[in-house]
Length: 138
Image: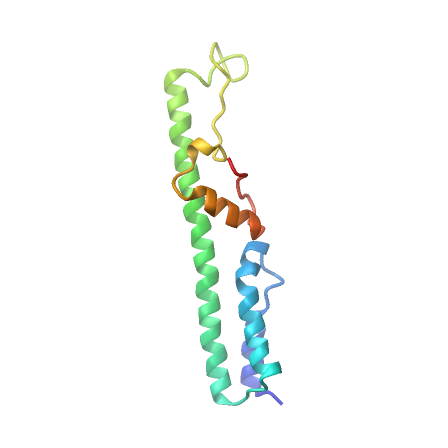
């Protein structure tokens, strides 16, 4: 029988409630935690310590994934803002499709021109992990 403290820690490895992109990061930690208990039949105070340290690692990995998206979103928003400002300065965004007399060009954060170095790789990884709002490859 597994010690109650270890059972208590195991609940924090559940990932079904997380969005897909975060669940993908959390899932391997869930598997390892349950393997330590179920397959290897470890128990006692050292198992609880191992699970707590694994939980710390899982939490850090999930936070890293969240911060990566926030950085990507910030960079995309900033780049889209620069493109939009440039279009406004040239009047290209004005016209029949966007105002008076221009080309009707609309800048979006998804356009390839607005993404920085490494963005294609990050976007592909985001799409593969089911990350919401991940841009299409440009």
